[in-house]
Amino acid sequence: MRNLILAAGLVCLAAPAAAQPRHPAPNPPPPTRLDRRLPPPGEVERYGAMIERLTDALLDVDVGPVADAIDPYRRYDPRRGPDSLGELATRRDPYARRRLHAEIEDTTAGLGAATRQLRTMAPLVAMAIADTRRRIDDAVRDSRIRRERDYGPDYPPEDPRDR
Image 1 (tube, rainbow, N blue to C red):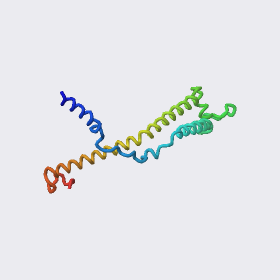
Image 2 (image 1 turned 90 degrees about the horizontal axis):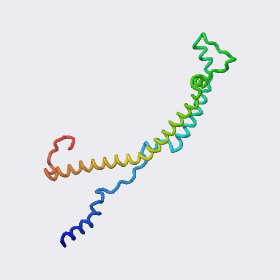
Image 3 (image 1 turned 60 degrees about the vertical axis):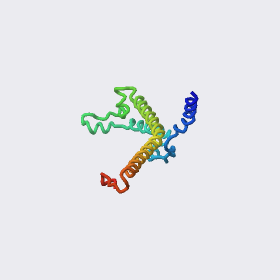
Image 4 (image 1 turned 180 degrees about the vertical axis):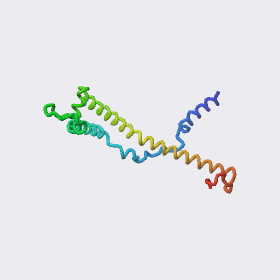
């Protein structure tokens, strides 16, 4: 019984040492290319506001003369006023302009969230790739060491690329 208690105590003492990682944790990688190319947080929302203003400007373009040039039987009527893209869109859907702005806002919000998530995940993905690369290099090195140990340093490799 005494030996069992002693063994359990030694296992408890050795557990923290066994739980330590084999390799030290890698330093955080420098900013990735993706991280440097992503717009800063909040800039996507500013892009959305600019797109909304640009959309309003495009919806206010008078296309009446263009429609007259395309359709020879349709003539511009000054009493009717200008035929803008926005007026043409709201003839069938009175809320077309509001819907377009809502879609732009929703898309901008989604892109902003995706950009923030990418900015958060880019260093983690880079660290995972670096860790995988290090593990593969360790496995290849261990394989070569084992081969030299088992067969000797002059043993010819099976694959000429290993030379």
